Image (cartoon, rainbow, N blue to C red; front, side, top):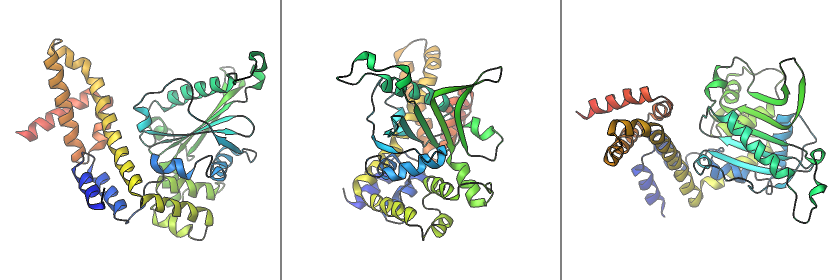
Length: 339
């Protein structure tokens, strides 16, 4: 596919105008691909290609200089939703102390992220506790299970994090607390990082004086690698330059460019399917169970959300998928504009 053909395909897609302009700028070499993109982040922070970068991120965030990556860990265990993978980038790895870590990049704000992390960590813990081939069952016991770490980098903070009043953007969960005040150790550790808040504090110079500035800059880079202030303040740092150079090479790769478009389209598909699932029960009621009634409802949903995406109103789509009453407001607006 030529550059011109790809740009034409981007222009004809149903993604937002903002996303179209962003992708075209990448194809034309005017900006770098987002570091948090699935096609990029898995290479930049690969446990096998760049374990030192994952070490840096984990050591600084967990405040543990002993953490060291051994090698990548393949996705095992129960199958996850085929749709969730379009929004989450998983980078699983085994650590040298036999723990498993999973770095996740959450590109879309998801209010269920706490539950998701809890489920993922449970699955990973079972994988760790399982007996390897050639191992006797009695060779594995509870004491040998070293635990798991779930590190979630959130590009857009979900509502519960936005509403929580704190000047901190890293939230570590290391213990379970009883109602009597006892701290109970856990085999599962969670860390939730608000990338948008980290970027905001970095740009406004409102971060705390005890912050790890190099870590803050890396988090800001993951949130917005094209930021001019960040580029200016890291121009002499080889660590950041190497990452920037690698992302630049990926951004110029036609295969990666196609993958970036596919990612944007996957998010659109996810939102449409989510909206359809939420409203299908209501559609069946109005159509009294008739197949043609459900088909009309699906077509209506696709028209409404397709119109919103073209108008650059992705935020309204996200809200409507959570609030059926708000969907009705948008539907009425859409119908009034068609007249």
